[in-house]
Length: 193
Image (spheres, rainbow, N blue to C red):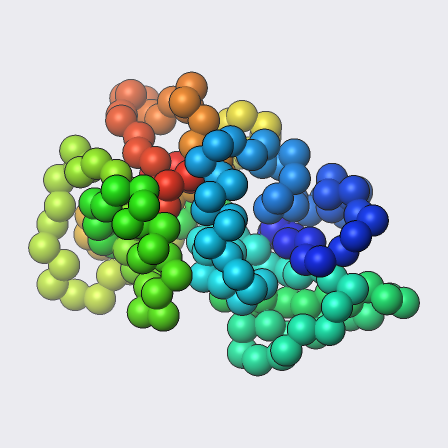
């Protein structure tokens, strides 16, 4: 589960690790040049960009408007904690890919109709074989092992899909599927697929 710290003046971003949570804007993950423009597109804590980054909670000192995307769950003094039920799992299968330039992808992610659970935006066409989806997509992921720099994820689906990891797309990342090296892609301009 990830935390977004919103509009707190004197907060060390890495304090989320004290509660075994990962802050979406701190050292976990390290911000690369591609990550900052992605975050810059998110104008509110309800932004869909935070959904695709797996943000489940918002910590702030400012009262925020509550709706189905943001619900106050705790207050301790001046600090408010909101839940974001729309935050997606860090490891998930997505049944459709759309090839866009980074600039077009950033613009697409701010559109009301954009649904990161249904389409992954990539800058090049995946080499994967695509089956025509003739039934509702069913896909599941299970993180088997995770430690810094390593993820082992088991997946099952009824059709072609891309595994999206809402982790920063570092250039040295390596992917194996059933023991075989496979290409990987940068998704949503800054994370892995």
